[in-house]
Amino acid sequence: MIRKVADAVRVAMKQAGIADAGDVHYVQTKTPLLTIDTIREARSRGHEVFTEDTLASMDVSNGTTGAGYRGGPGRDRHAARRGGAP
Image 1 (cartoon, rainbow, N blue to C red):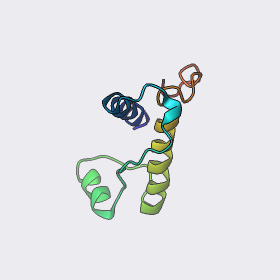
Image 2: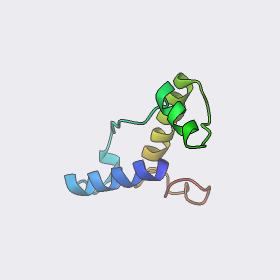
Image 3: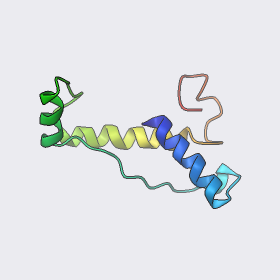
């Protein structure tokens, strides 16, 4: 998810003609959350989920998105060395 958000920020910047990441002040995303139905569906396919707490899944989803934005172009040049998004 982190890489997907970082890549999407890059694409959006290019499409908007924004060359300097410093000109990007806000990124809004719609992120997936676990629901009772998606948890059941995953289990029916033999998969486990990281949590059954649907509210906790929102925290993880939002945090991942934020990390993707932070790892976008020009945000953190050292993230790739630490294992984060480039």
